[in-house]
Amino acid sequence: MEKTDKEGPWLAIGEVAAKLGVSVETIRLYERQGLLLVAKSEKGQRIYSDSDVSRLRCIRTAINEDKISIEGIRRMQSLIPCWTHIQCPEEQRESCPAFLRTSGGCWTYKHDNNWCAEIDCRTCKVYRLSNDCENIKSLIYRDMIPQTENHRQQENET
Image (cartoon, rainbow, N blue to C red):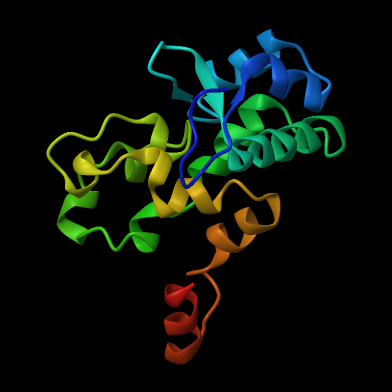
């Protein structure tokens, strides 16, 4: 593929589908359902980074091995408290769709007039950390389990 940068190398949708043993339409379905955000080349073609491939593997594992539906994955992603991970001001949470709804990860909502409006979701800490299946549980429970201030500082530094 023509594009490379800090996320690269970039792969075409057909290459990713072959690598994962799925159809191109399956990958497009996951995109339509808000399970992943896709970059596009200058020519408008979908292109995928290594982290996108990891995210797709995570989705496939959840569906095939853990027997979690697409809707179940969307609900799990909606449980990630993005407002705590990106330190969203409390007053903005009252009108934030990601805080108020449970139908998808924060990246699936339009953020108007709040702190997240200026953030590119593909580069957001919450979206990037949720690429790895092992991180999702810790992202959800991070603020539910009492931790020392030192432990929180260590997490924020990573």
